[in-house]
Length: 331
Image 1: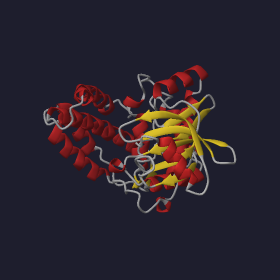
Image 2: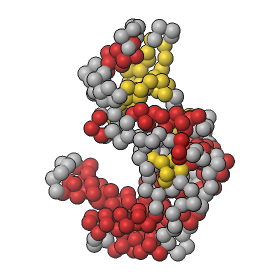
Image 3: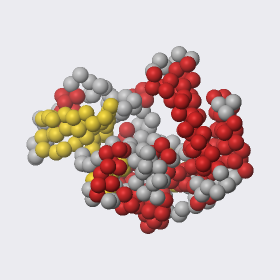
Image 4: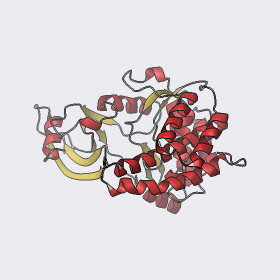
């Protein structure tokens, strides 16, 4: 990031034709991929409260202009998302391409979200609103999405082949993963009857919640088109996104019924069997990812103790898999 992001943002917003004052910078997050910086900008006609999402060019999943276009497309179809104010693909201003959005107030940190919904008694409302947002997203014709957006791998059989290869490479001696792969093979569904525009990471941790409920869906950098909608639905239901509120399947907010109610209202069609299959595959995939992080530490690729610690969590994933594939389970 630029040593003086306020100056860089002011120069961009002024575009050399007007003087813009940027003040009250606040770093909202500092993740591995993105930096979110809240600020106020005096554009001459009053002060606006904005957020710049800055993405280092080297790790940009999709170009920022494509991400912004997807978000605006979703917003025009009723998915709550922060309105896009400006897009900059030039890394010179602040050290990376960025998108400037209107600031949406509320909680984003998962445990704070859960404390808020618990205190306000709105867990079911937020889960239902989350389901409705996803239903509205999946109701969009994928052909309307930007052509440069990556195409999702929607075919379950292909996904299963890739998962099998990953398990053989990273977890060849873990019988629970082998058992889960056999279950996935026996229950592998056909290609989806229809594909959808996917967010791929719409879960507790990528939403803004206030006392009135869901206010915005964030982090659209992983969006894909032509995917199986049940893959998107399964992801927020994984136990890792419940943050110890394990009895509330969707993000620790509420059970499945509330989410599905909203999903149907938003125009989605819930398929329990496909949902269960994708939930098992996503859980297995998360376990493979943890094993990969541990392997990167052990071979010296990444000397970060957090990567090393990921390996101990593989056993947690084994428990999740056993609970999901047991005969009495419903996903």
